Length: 413
Ligand code: SAJ
Image 1 (tube, protein in one colour):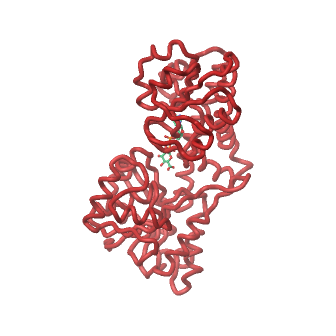
Image 2: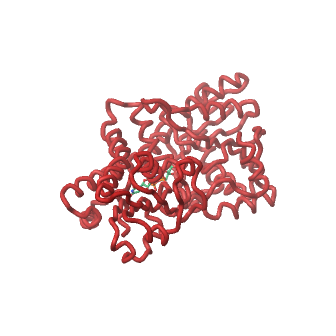
Image 3: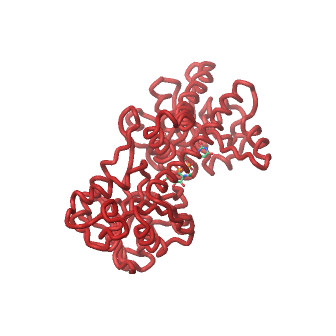
C-alpha cells in the first residue's frame, strides 16, 4: 500500500515545494508542468519561484534523482493536482479550466488503484467535477461517483494551507483537511499525506474540505476588512487606529488583524469570491469584506492626492511594492496598484523602494518609475507612503521621517 511514485501536476508556489518535500522522504516524485522553462530549471536543480530554503531542498532531491520534472504526465501511484484556480468575468466565476486540463492530461496514464488528490483551492463541487472529467476520459475505469469505496480510482480533495514565506515548515507541520469522495478515498489520501505531514490529517468529505479552505481565507479577509474599515473611520474621527486595535485586542476575546493598503496575493483576495459566486444571496458579509478591502487602495490614492495638493510637484516615495512583508512577490499587490494609479494620475514624481527586488517589472519600467534605496528615497521625498511593513522599514531610524509628510498604511513608523 505504499507509494513508490508520486506525480505532482503543476510546479508552482504549492506544487514545487510539495514535490520537493515528498521527494526528500525518499519517494520517487515526477513533477509535471506545461512550462518547459520551469521544467528545465528544476531539472538543473534550480527553482523559478522565490521561497526561503526551497532552492536547497530542490537541489538536493534533484541531485539524488528523487525529483524529476517533465511536461508529459507519466504513470504513478498518486497524482496531486496543484494548478491555479483563478476567477473570470464580472461575477467572479471560478475558472476551472486548469483543473480540467490537468484531468485530461493525467487520464491516459491512470491505472487501477491510483489516487488523485486535488490540492488547488477550489469552489465547492470542483473535486466531483475533476472526478467526472477523469471518468469521461477513462470509461474503462471506475470512479467514486459510480462505485464509492469499490472504485478503481480514489479521488480526494486536500486543500493546501501554507503561508508564502513559511511554506517548507507549514507543509510539514500544518494539520491537513482530507476530504475523500468516499471513505476509502480519504483513507488512501491520509496514507499519502502521512508520508510527509507531521500535523494531524483530519478526514471529512470533499465538499466540506473545499468549503473549509474557502472559509479559512474568507475569515481572514473579513477580519482584515473590519480592520480596514476601522482605519477609515479612525481617520475621520482623528484616532490612531493602531493604538485603538492594540487596546481592543487586550480584551481576551478580541483579536483584530491589521489594516493595510488593501488585501493582495492570489488567495485571500480570490477565494471568498468562490463562496459569493455559489451563494450570492446568502454570502453578504463575505462579499462586503471583499468590496471594503478592494476599495482600500483607492482610499490610499485619495489620501496621497490630498497630501500632494499642498506641494507644487512633490517627490513621493512609495515604500514597498510586494503584496506583503518580507517577500519579493509583486503579483496582485495593492502597493503596486497604488503606485501605478499615482503615476497614471500624474500626482508628483514617484520613486519606489522595494528591498526584495533588484529590478522593477516591465509595466513599471514603461511608466519610467524609479527603484531606489531607502536612504535616497528619504533624502529626496516630500511625501513618504509606507505600503509594506518590510523589516527594513520597521527598523529604519524614525527621525529620518520627521520632516516628511508620512502616510503610513501599515503602522510601522
Ligand atoms: N494582510 C493585512 N492585514 C493583516 C494580514 C494580512 O492587510 O493583518 C494582507 C497582507 O498584507 C496581504 C494579504 O492580506 O496583502 C494576504 O496576506 P496573508 O498573509 O494574510 O495571506 P497569504 O495570501 O499570503 O496566505 C493565505 C493564508 N491563509 C490564511 O492565513 C487563512 C495561507 O495559510 C493560505 O495557504 C494561503 O492564503 C493560500 O494559499 O490560500
